[in-house]
Length: 234
Picture 1 (cartoon, rainbow, N blue to C red):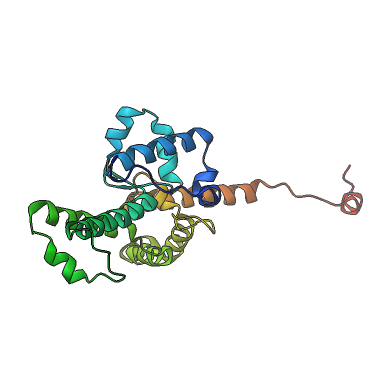
Picture 2 (cartoon, rainbow, N blue to C red):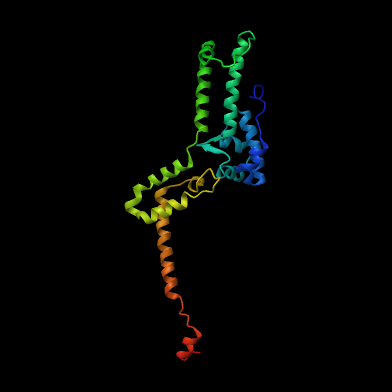
């Protein structure tokens, strides 16, 4: 990576307007270091590998919670670098093919089948294709409305046990997100077991209702000055 692709594109305007600008300065500094390691290792590095180098788990989790980086199980994903790497490696292959033809000028619209025909099929080639496909899949992210609908549908199985009122309250709370947020509230949690959380939600709802009822019973009766005068109360 260091020889073929020694640097990646960095746009200040993008940096200042995206989620990273809302992170702490220490998390922003960690992000820059992470980008450098990520690019140097051909956009393949795990959470454990990186934290062994720079042990700042709090700032790392902040980047995950804010949607600056993503985790695919243990693999770190930085989408804008994945896209740059994908574009750069495709261009590198095309240039290599043109060079093997004796320095003939590159066609304006190279035929994909012609390019494939000049390459000898080998294990490294097929591995590279699989890697490109994997990176393209990582870049594709479901729309937040689609994920919200999936979350709502997943609650239908609990309708009989918890009722529509509890499920609606639960859904509205955990799918909350800001206008520019990439993730909903429940997606920012490290773990999220719907059944356990619904049990807790129901228990809390019962406690809240008890507190409201108790507060109403204990509320003192306030009499106006005229009523006190009429009843002879000082």
